Image (tube, rainbow, N blue to C red; front, side, top):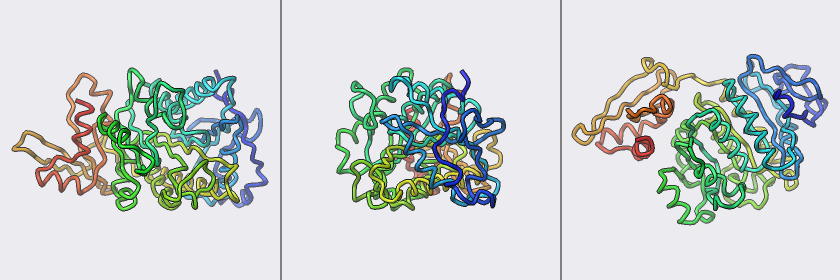
Length: 385
């Protein structure tokens, strides 16, 4: 089936974007599916945006964010974005989820990076399924105040999508990191569950005080899921419920920029935005800014993920436990970013190849020099071996 059959044009008129004739805003650098029958070409495209229907079947959330995104100045002069429009709603929720997975699969297969906009966070499951179809092992990072590890026996929802992914067999999720959970929303049982299966969870305060660690978590991810409820209600009123605590708007933008800069990341989704509660479009405006930062990061990638060519990096071999454990660290000559390698000699080495280099910090290297195995390294070692 042709990719265009899954889409409908955006419902934002060009007159609302303004300034396109000056060639200086995002609209002027974007190929947009704005008219029926005029679907954009995907030839040579590297970055695409896909709108997702809301629970009521409309695409109001995605189009509202577009209204604020397209008038923004281009983050970089050479940027190119293709907006494929909004996914057509299926007869059932399952039909819509299938269409989303099919679309994302086709785009990822062409080595495109995808911005997913709108819908509930359960769409992350459909995003994961696209990698499953491709047979790719993935790491997932979720910027979220909750763990979303509810009962997988219940229907898929924004509150149990992680459990639904964990329950998939065969399973293609190697790692999961929650970034910014709030302890009063997450019970001890959920925290123990994540720890028992070797996943990572970092409290809001810990991330806010250590954005360097947050950068490594995002850099390790193949896909990132952003729940707008991770942002405090005063900065993002367009959410159902909401909390007085959470990330500040600028912190969200910084995290998303980290995602854009990561050579490894190929999809990012922005979910749970509710225009009904949004005062003066404040949340849509914040999400537009976050996407702006992602685009800036994407076109500023250093192409220094040491997967293919390790020769352009400084190598540091650290021997621990009287030589029983050896960890190789890599430091990029381009960006000064660090990685550490997890040894794996199993039959599926090719399958895990791009997951064996873990983003880390200089402090992880210092820890290894003190004869202490970094916790992150040990978690990955246990998952793979």
